[in-house]
Image (cartoon, rainbow, N blue to C red; front, side):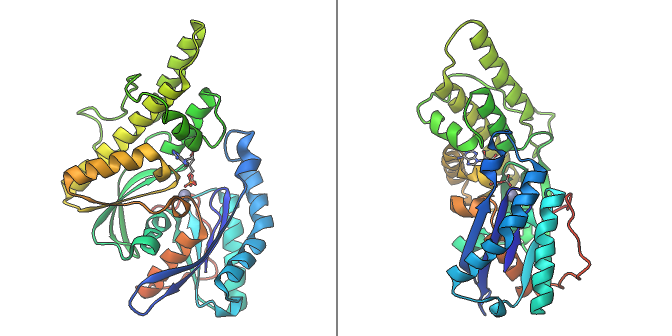
Length: 338
Ligand code: KG4
Ligand code: ZN
C-alpha cells in the first residue's frame, strides 16, 4: 500500500511484488483538490491539508475495492516522507503510521522524487542501471542519475528558480488561460507556430552549469512580450506565444537531458512528472533520443502526475532490496533530499 499527500493529490496505490522482483499495479486511486486552488492560481497549503484529511480514508477504501482486497491483505506500507508541503505530508504520514500500527506491518517513509521514477517500472518493467531521469512537474525540475532505485540516486542538476510546470502555470495566467496551465497551453500551442517568437533558452550559455535549468527569465520574457503587444493595441496571438514558449521549454529540457546522458554514457532516459504529459516535450524527446541512440521511457500521463501507485511501487522495490523499514517516530521532511 502506498500513500501520497505531498501536494494537492491524495493518492492511495496498491501493488503486488512478485517473486521475480516484478511489481504489478492493482489499484491507483487519486482525489485531487486542484479545483479548490484554481481561483488562487496555485496550491494553497492549508486548503490542500484539509482536503487530504477529508479524502484520505475514502481514497484508501476505493483503492481496496478496486484491487478486490482488504486491509488485512497488506504486507507493507510506504508513504511519501518528503519533499513537499509540510502540512500536506503530515496527513499522509499520520495515516500511514495508523495503518501500519493497526495492521502490524512495516512502514517505509520514502522520497517523492524517487517515486516519480519508480512508477515507470509499473508500465515498462525493471529499470536498467544506470539510467537518467528527467523529473518535470509543478514543484520540481531535476536531472537525476539512478544507479539503484532503492538506494542510489544522485542529482546532476535542477532548476535554479521556477519549476517547469510552474512556468507553464505562470505563463497561462499571462495568457488568460486557466490553472493548471500546462494542458491549456499544450492545446493552444497545437495551432501556433513554435518559431514565431524567439524566447530565451535559460542557462544554455557556455559558462552556465551544464545540467541546471532556469525558467524565470523565460516566464518574464513571455510576460514582457504580451504586455508590449497589449500596449500597442494588438491582439495577442495566444497560439503562437504558447507554441513558442512551449518550444523553448522542451528545447532546453531535452537538450540538457541528452547532454547529461551523453556525458555519463547512459543509454536510458525516463521522463516523469506532470509536465511529461506535454505533447511537444515527448515528441522532441523521442526525436532527440532516437538521434542519440538513447532509449526513452515515459510513463502514461496518469502515472506521471502525483499518485499513490508511485509510492507503492517504490515501497515494493525497497522491500525487494531488503531495505530497513522506518521507525514509528519517522516524520515528514518538507525538504527531503533525493
Ligand atoms: O506532477 P504534477 O501533477 O504535480 C506536481 O507538481 O508534483 O505536475 C503538475 C504540473 C502543473 O504545473 C501542470 O501545469 C503541468 O504539470 N502539466 C503540464 C501538462 N499537463 C500538466 N505541463 C505541460 N504540458 C502538459 N500537457
Ligand atoms: Zn510530484
